[in-house]
Image (cartoon, rainbow, N blue to C red; front, side):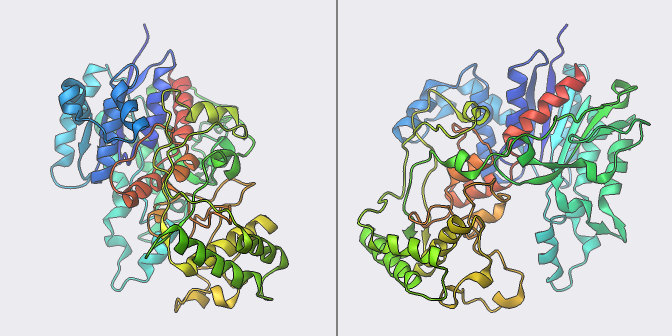
Length: 497
């Protein structure tokens, strides 16, 4: 008899892990479906509920595509499909894990899931990473009276472990930032404590690294073996994350894996392959934006770069071509969809939805004129030299007026995503200004759109992010790449089969 597994998704964000697992659960002999998602952010919860609602149908409802393809607002789902919408609200809970009373409330749902599925459950999720990330630790070190041991975020993983104790799932997946490997609290490494707690939960779990074989003697794998490089697994992004898979010990007796669960590294996918089919757009001006004003501002910046002896000749030539160009992209928003011939087949199939005729959430930001010049320089430099320039390589007239620009902490302040390589890590910082995520085309002179960032994160093209644009960016940057999550889910299925 086929076992069906219920997925409990903690710290779910906009649903990257859940998307991968639910998609794997639809096309296999080991079915899985999301039973409960828990997230605290308002807009991420809206995104999760919409996706949960859509997944409640064998095929997404026609009204969804009608709205997206025509550019109209989504209909009132509660009126059209009240039972499906009610189910979505039940599946997705807006709760702050760690707050008083939340565990006790969720414990009731965990008991129901365990009993309904005869113990066949899977726990997934990634506790918030700000306290572990290198950037977060740098920010915290500059805060007056900051006490590392008093930061509750260091211990949110214990809420995950607490639920692991209660649910006793057949398997779990916990994701976090690379910085967790080196983060220290109370004079000791936090990651060794995390592994100890995960291993000892319930009746015990066998911890499995995804990219390495398991030790022959049954010992725990070294901490570094739990680090995953997303770019080695078909994701067009250099995203390095700690991912721990655990199998309940009663199901892992004698388990030894001679090959990595995720298989051998795949050929890298470049930025150009991932987003090269997305229509060109012009950037905008943050004030007084019109086509004419933008063209004038860009030509002024291009002229200054083209005439500067401090700029490499290859960059000056690109700037000169833009300065004299008669045709520049006029649109700032596009819903036009086109076919890519450069994209690898695995991603083309992953992104595609034949019923979707529009391109979602492809709208550019507005920038100040000075940033147009910096973006132009950076993208032209990247095109010429195959790497993004450091801040010290910018000419003086393009240097930002930051007091701490010479500190060395902002060497990559303006970073172009280079055409021929996977992108750098897409983070929630993309919601702030886009300076770290400059498009590679100097003519467009802009940062990435939400859809382009979502492509680099491998969200399917029919995945709609709720809330204002800033919140959409934030959700994309906080997610686990769904295509990587799908591969992890398939690996977990093989372990449970």
